Figure 1 (tube, rainbow over the protein chains, first blue to last red):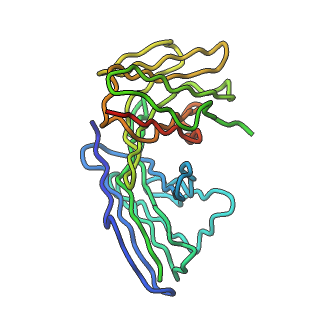
Figure 2: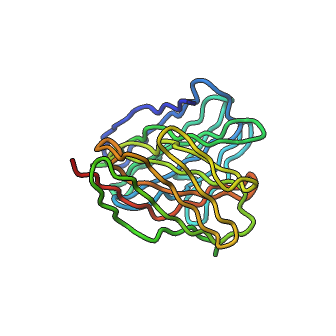
Figure 3: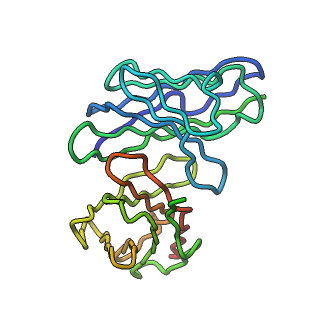
Length: 116
Length: 111
């Protein structure tokens, strides 16, 4: 099946610093990628939708200046958490939708962010 | 708003049994449905999908059934194994809009 990778898998950073998470579709092109956040024992919460070459669309309540998204190519999207605070600690998961008529959606392995 | 929900939060089965995980959806415009498996600390893994022009689709040991009349989706796992233990999410999508996830069902398989 299609593979989506994320890097890093785990990151610990200090309050006030910024962290960048990369999401890559390894064997398919993805015009559209998604960023989710997941709290323990809960479902996935969509943060934003990114389209290659255009600005991301953020869900209500998600600060676009805090969670910067860049979708520079058909295989790469990045999420930068700026001026991180402990409440930003979470499991961040990206997803990529296959470009094509079916539009299957595959997920990355997730990134565990801990802000101290 | 539209939502996808699950009837049972936890399902416990014995190894070798067949498992059935259910899901109700409310958006009649949804035409694409996916089941994902998520193990602890990992991202969701695509299991099987089905489009609204079908009512059944089979994969390896898994079958998805779609009943559009009552807006119900189910995932059947044959000969459940300990490695099947995970949280299973159903998701729906109208057209190429965003996926809407259910709350998840935890499957526990006892040896």
